[in-house]
Image 1 (cartoon, rainbow, N blue to C red):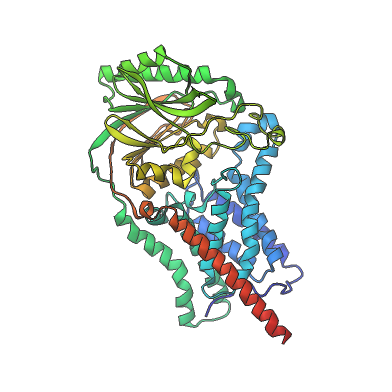
Image 2 (spheres, rainbow, N blue to C red):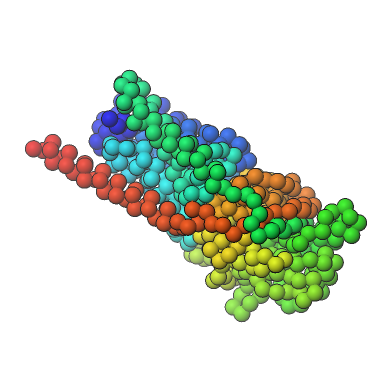
Length: 516
């Protein structure tokens, strides 16, 4: 027996039913927001999805789309509120409202399809797959998509994080959604039957994700396999001025040079251990030729250093991460591949002038190769800021031999809101997904060092200069998630589409039977 979450399209609703469902849909979106960092209520995510599932019970496709819009919009308006710290002072609420609405439309479309699969056997599975399908599409289209707010990124404090080593972000998101829709099916079943065999069948979607996650944790390795590296992070700080940071690059550069000198002095005095490698954040300087000041700072440190900034190339500039040797100076670099639309490149430039302060800036030049740089005798994988949200970037690095991962970022644009904590959570999930230690280097915080099990070992507070030094393991083994790569998500997408096709076919058969 399978609990029904939606009857055939067109079933009439009680006249005042929406008076309960509308606030429930909005409230579920609010609960989902609080499941994400900096809040640590990860367990609210399946509860939010469960309420969402109950709201959709016995709704038509049109009503399901409307309730899905309310659920998703209430979530994204809160989850992306940090855009106001970035753009709101100059452009008002429109960029924040617009992006939140566009992101909500993906789940709205998936919600419209949910009545088609909700009456199939094993309905929680198909509903969860449609949720993952909506995340997959909005993480790609248009202009490279926007993966922020995937269910998986809110689970770094919970037991489901272990599933990242098996199937990455898609599997963790699927587990959260399956758990939630399974809970809603149990609630609906409780109203209609007490048969044990029915309860056992519907308990599987609730129990299985947790059991699988706990079974996955022994597969999450943390030991060094090819030695260790002691890495120092320089967080020089930046002014908290939103988009006016465009004119503050000299200040950011000066701050990081000064903090590097202080680190070098602490190393000489013996109050800080000498690292094997020093890492700076993203966008700390410009590269327009020889740079005696950085040459001197790195020579004073006496160890290789990785420095982020705008690198001039034929045809424009790259958002680059450059190796810097204390003797030989500038070396190989990595150029950011996944550029930020309406910021680092400008589609629909005329339209963008209505909401983007970068509309008249030249597009950056996107990189074309994986971000593996060799420094301090080890291959290191780099994902610059926004790239950590995308599955392929660090996966390519690991596939090309990276033994430790580095995420340089410039979160000073986004004020003291949630953004930097949301991004740190992504880095923690990537650590488990790839079985690698991760170093997050941020201009204004939160810089952190992360073990391969996702544990933060050290971190710096926001809008303060400082350094942290940590010895981290180098690892070469690949997780099941890395071996499966993109096929985990592709398989889920195919299954979701097959379920929709089955739901359509079932509806056609029922209509024909009714006509006969």
